[in-house]
Length: 397
Image 1 (cartoon, rainbow, N blue to C red):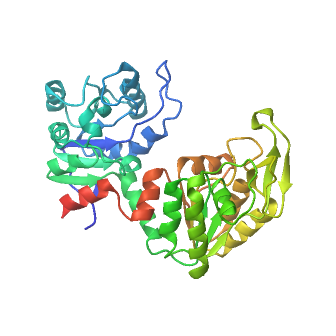
Image 2 (tube, helix red, strand yellow; image 1 turned 30 degrees about the vertical axis):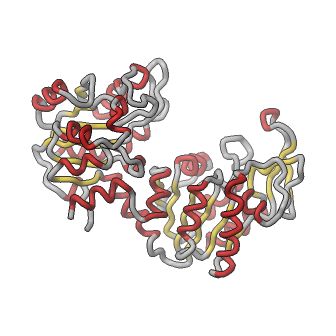
Image 3 (cartoon, rainbow, N blue to C red; image 1 turned 90 degrees about the vertical axis):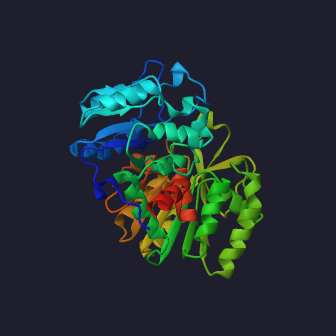
């Protein structure tokens, strides 16, 4: 059954518990260098205010580990949110208890309260039903607007939904689900661009795509595992040795399924220590010398990748193709971003590092969906659900 969004249920004059993901870095002086997670939740919060709802926001900040600590307080986020919304934000000293219930009971329509860090309580981390019940005492409608952490089994993410008669998702959450669901039955040809670090999660994503993909373009450190699986030298390039066996299986599976698995034939490489800003050169032949490391895909591989993108009708991109965080090593990613912007394919870019790399290259999203769900997005594409979604679906039914 479809989970409704906040715009599809009656929330007028009601009290909402809105689970958001405000897990951002805060400086010692209380500054927030990157407030994108806060701005992502603004449309849902503003919609609720427009419906004269009373809005109780709940989030965690990683690191507290079940202990109260001023270092991990959400108070700076409350101040920033007050600026963004141009309104007063109630901020209690806890996320549950008598004081929180008192403030909640006194809230007027259109008012907003941000609870203190949920991770101050071990019950949040343990997915405790008791903690979820106490959290639910401040509202009558549960709204999940924290897609990016909905793969985690936390009390406020999974158990909380069971303590409300009405549950829904926020506007951003709904957008993530609707767009990423398109990969369940994609328009063909379907091409996947996989880069970044080669983690077990990345391997799992590739495995899950094998029944629905036509072309897989491998770049970044992921390519090193596949090169090693083919018996090729990778020099001093980054590799997770534990992924080589899985890479071998995927190469074999791609052959039997007639999937084009495209592994780089040339690279931008460097010798020496990256911190000494060594000059780069082109490595051809698909083998990386022992004294070198690959830092980007090469020009011929870039042309091949762009050609496959131009033929696709659906494109998924997860992971940059080079060390885009270092100047001069993001040209492959930038060139493929240009090819994607010029294609007619529907596409989605998944992961903050990938989005940052593309935006740094001047990529304009256009019809491309930029998914900021990180690991949750990857898990949703792979498993077609998330623990939070399963919990909400049980209650909606």
